[in-house]
Length: 135
Image 1 (cartoon, rainbow, N blue to C red):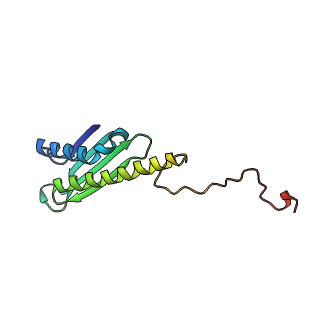
Image 2: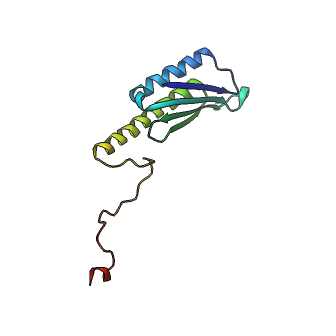
Image 3: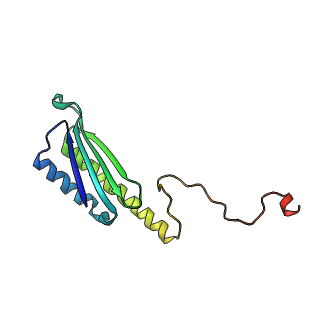
């Protein structure tokens, strides 16, 4: 699992980096074989002014599935990381389970599993107009 952690508008400490990596591994290890890359962007929106401005943007790049993108903003960066990684883990499990269910049922995988696909007409050689049927 390739993990890229970036900090914007603040200095990324070793403690914060190790916490983020530990939380990512804890939340996403179950689907490790589907993950190509993880990019985490941490930012302090208001800078030293404080407030609910610690932002965690998490992008999980998957093989054969759409990316999982989660964002969370909190007053504490550790809380933002915890919430974002937990949500990413739940979302990833849901996507992988949906893909496996579709494969077991013999359905072709849609390009985006979150978008409802239109129903296909399975009667190919049947005429659609009454005059074509000789009526």
